[in-house]
Image (spheres, rainbow, N blue to C red):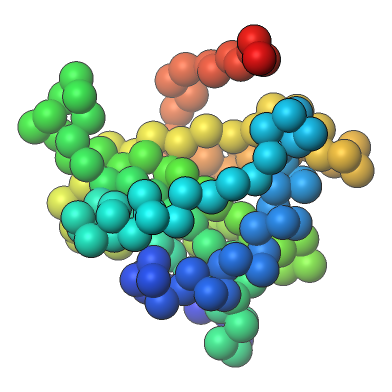
Length: 157
């Protein structure tokens, strides 16, 4: 049975790490120039500061998905607690029915309980190497989110 719940970063980290390579291969652009290189000491410091919020999705104890958000004041709106979604992923085999919606709803519920009032995230708009769309904007719209910005990137190295 699949369940979503908040877990400490340090507790879920050993289960997340084996999923990162597949997550990276699926969603990252310019992979040859910008390799996966997680700053684990920075994440540990964020956890120690109380600024990480991790929702783990498990199927009979096995991690099948995760959502990691950074919780801190927005530099322009310091009186309104914000959460910035850093990572979210569900293994392809477990992306059925409403898995994504369940993960995001649990994040919304538990972040609201923490006092967060605004959520910020993005979605990939390019296609995966398989050609499948990575845009999950429809899930966010179904949950009542509104598109606020577009991001651009450019390699200058």
